[in-house]
Image (cartoon, rainbow, N blue to C red):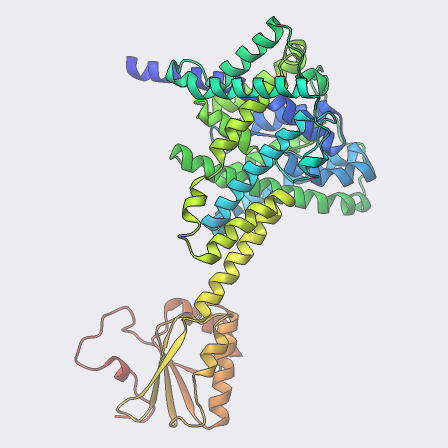
Length: 532
């Protein structure tokens, strides 16, 4: 009993300290994403608080951190510029409703369609984007990259800090990274990332070091967000404006969250609930839209900080959101003194831990198409956005899969003892294999009775049904009778559902699931009409 209580206390302590670390790292990110979207910094901070708190309570993945993200911010730019911030709030409300519907419809199961090379590309691309986003802090112009989404501009376009300021900032970043790396060898009583932020901040304040701090980006001081119904006309025209944005934002948010959930599952060796996460995220965004927030989804960088700092429970996400609220209400003057270099150092450690370095080792060992998908998804993630990259990766993987399996269908022809030509089909019959399938039959040269055996195949889709229909027409035109045997239950159901699309003699095989003994040959299982 004592051991259990001690373990719970240790877990709670880890969650709270990890939440504090995450909250500190959330401040510049939320501000940056708000500026990218063209709204006030507090709009991003409110979203980080509300989305983070509600998803921590209602979501399906304890330990995962949600908040305002760049992936959503870049989509919001045009909406805010053309219609104003009130339309953004209305869009976020609708976005949340769509996500709740997705959770109710259990769409999270479709994340299994994302192949492993796409997952690797997603992780690597996001790590690169996080790295590029931090480079903007070394420039004089402020935000140069949309952190966590897309690459904008190039390194040579940045107006770098003066040499002295740049050297100081680089030195503080290195010190932060060194503390995070080596402190765990001395003690694990507090998260190393939190210790690094505190120590570097104290050093900067104590020695009066001139470097960029959080307050140089924007003030984070504010009050509790008031409840407010978006001031937009409740007309069909408003719905026509906001629905496309809401749908895209909902899709991006769900894809990024479900992929992050899958990554955290692998790291923690536990399993989250994707459908619950979809619904929880929808509730969070709907509420956020009514309280003046820009909406959000899972944040892979902050989630990695949380998990690496020991935050595995819901308390970590809850405490992160509550600490952020405290920063906004009463501790803004202190938080604004934190050096940007300390937070950049933390994010660089996240980059190192997020990037799958094993990709370089395995890329020559995996099939070329998998390597191509991995590299493509990484590049598309960097230059466009996450959702588009994942869709591209899944489409490429599906086309490669279809092409490879299209070449696997083959047909063996023989003549049985009844004088029927007997075809045995090997491989799946679907849209990509129908041409190869059809080319291997010779209706004009076959005997009067023809049997096609699907024991080693199955009809997968409507294209397969159409291929059988076309083949049946060819045999009818040549006055041949066609039989289909050894159909699986799924194939029979497809043929039955097709109705009169398929006008062939489907022969039921009661022994389909039973091993046929040597009493008679498998190809003799069905005799043509009139045979004895």
